[in-house]
Each structure stands twice: as structure tokens, then as C-alpha cells.
Length: 499
Image (cartoon, rainbow, N blue to C red):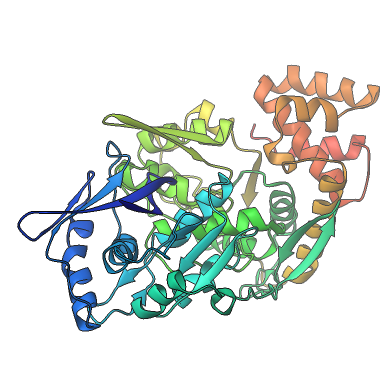
């Protein structure tokens, strides 16, 4: 019996799979066992065609392929290569597969192709320290070359794969990794990447200086923000520009975003750019929270989740956001399994002040009565709103309003504030600090403590709200290159709380 290593995706993490083969006496047959999905069962026809096309004779024996452990459900077309190698080399004593994981889908002619699961599987195995050497095709190698501490060997077709395992010199198959072209900064020996692409620039937003300042604070500290204003005042316009001034990303974050994109059946993008997810307000709960597939909350990890027309989302969706916004984790229970997702995203939301949208308008009169406005506001519960760090009211733009800040200038401020946070030894940005992190990094002098105590009594601030105030004040101080939180920083932070 010969074995070869592969793996399968189990929810969002990979499980190692040992592909076993036996060739016994009996009527010629080809069987795959071990809870294999339909696309694995179909590999029998692909493997047969690939072998016969390349003039390999199927052994006249009963062939059994087992995917171990058998209690785990397996899926994916990447098992083709492992199965074909076990059959084609079943009598070859020189072939040793012990140190290699192999992945690849076979065409009918024997060409090896990439599949959507290969990159997330190898990334997950690398994080678990379960993989060292991997054999894939060229397209797969380009993607996984970003993953550190693994040796990648590359083959084009089944003939080359067979040659790889029967030759002594495998160095010529070694894939040369390419350096990342993005700009980077080194802080405390760790590299962080960013790009200066401002396809949507802050200079296009006229006026709104208070909202722009809040947006920069939001990006610098990863603080959740709610924009309220009349239709056309620039809420969505401002929100979309936040994506381009976000803080730099570590290599782990870049790879994790690419992994989620691959699991969402999209081509992974390895640019150090925060992902943008913007579901419509009519989206179902399963599409937001997740069910059999990944939801928007999970896919927005390390990126941005934007809810436009916030009160029009169903109450079940908004209340389901409370845990991810507070604990940065989301536990989804399914039949016979539970999946825990990371949810460290920046939550941006926008809403009108009333159902007709004209309550704050200078030019249009509001058509809503007090009861309608109250019902509209009550769609957002207090516990949900308590998880918003920055609450901004945006007024309509005047003809004389001018632009005073560009995205490039804003991005430079964000990067400078980011450096301060990392140099302090923070593992998380200010907006995602734990209670212990707040005590350590958000200390106040006696004057600031008195101000915060008075604000707590006057505005009836909850413990969560106090922590939000402290974290925002810390970011404001960072943006001003201040090591201490001063009175002005705290007062500005309090001004962003919802009354």
C-alpha cells in the first residue's frame, strides 16, 4: 500500500488527508471511499482519461482509493493528482511521497490545473505547521508563493509529476518566489504593507471638515462609525473613500483576506488593500451572518463592512451584529457542527435622519410626523448603537465649501498614527483594544478623569461607552503625535458620542 498527503477544507480551516491505495486481485474496478463528495467521485473519469491519453495502462486489478480519516467529509477536485500518481506509480519502488503534499486538478489530457480550494488549504496547513514541501501547478504556485516557510515545487502535467517522484534531482522543479512590489514599513522588526492608490479621493468631498476628521480617526484606529444626514449630503461618498486610507496590513492579514476571497469563489487579490463588503439592505440573514456558506460578516474580516440605509436592515440582522462588533468573533451553529469566524472589521453605516430624509435639510421640508420619526429611529436598539464609536451628523454642502484635505494627506496621518500604536507594543489597533489594553494604553491624568466622570453622569454613559470614548481619545492623540491623552483629545472624543 502506498500513501500520499493531501488535504481538504473543513468549513474555513484545512484538515490533512492521507490518500491511500491498494491493488488487489479480483475483477478490474476503480473505487474511491472515505466520504468523498461528487466532484471527487468524478475524478475517476478524469484520472482514467489522463492516464490513458498519456499511454499508461490501467492495471487489471481491483483498485481502491481511501481518503483517510474517513469520518471527515472531503470535497474538491485537487485530489486528482494524488490519485493519478498512486495509480501510475503503484509498481515504482523509487517513488516516495512521504515529505510532499500534492494538489492539482487534472484535465482529460493530463494537464494540471489550479482550483479555488488549493490556496486556502495550503495557507491553513502552513499556519498549523503541517506542511513543508508542496507539489502544484504553475497557476497554484503563483498564489501560494506569498505563503512563507514552505518549499514549492511546480509541474505542468502528469508526465512531469511522475518524473518528479522518480528522479533524484528535484531542484529544477523548485519555484522561485517573487518579492512583493507594494510599499512597506518595518516596525519592531515586522513588515507592514500598503499602497497609495486613491481612485476615490477626499478632495472630491466639498466641505464636511468634521466628518472628514472623524473618517480619518475611524481609519487610524479602526473605529466603527455612523454617518447621519439628508440624501445627497455625501455619506456614501465619504464612506467609499475610507477604504483607500486604511492602515497598513501585515502579511498574515493580506493572506487571510486572499483566503476568504478564494473561499468566496473569487480570484484572490494579494494587494495590501482592505476588502470592501457592502450588502444591500434587503439581504437575507443567512447571506449576512452565514449559513451553509460564508456570510458578509465573515468575509469582511480585516476589511470594511458598509451598511447603507442602516434602519432598513432587518432587526434580526442588526442584533446579530452585536456579538461580532463587541467580541470580534462570530459563532455560527449548524447541524452537527459549530464554526467560529474572526470579525475584526471596520463597521461603517449611513442613515437618513427620518423616513423622508429631509429632517436636517436646509432646502426641503420634512414630511414626517413625530411618530414616524420615532418609529424610524427605534429600528436601531440602544445596545446596537452603543457599539458605534463615532456618530457624525452631516449637513448639506454649500456652494462655497472647499476641500482642505486629500486622501494622500489623510493616509499619511493614518500611517503615522499606525506606527505609534505598533511601537507602543499594541497587537491590535485602538478601536479593537481589550479591557486590559485600554487600562494599559488609554491612561488619563486627574483632570481628564474628572471630565470623564462628569460626562458619565451627565450623559449616562455605559461602561462600554466609556471604553469607546477612551479608545477614540487615544487615536486622536496618536494623530496629533501625542504620547498622552490630553483634555482636548478627551473633549473631542466625547463630542463624537451619540446623545
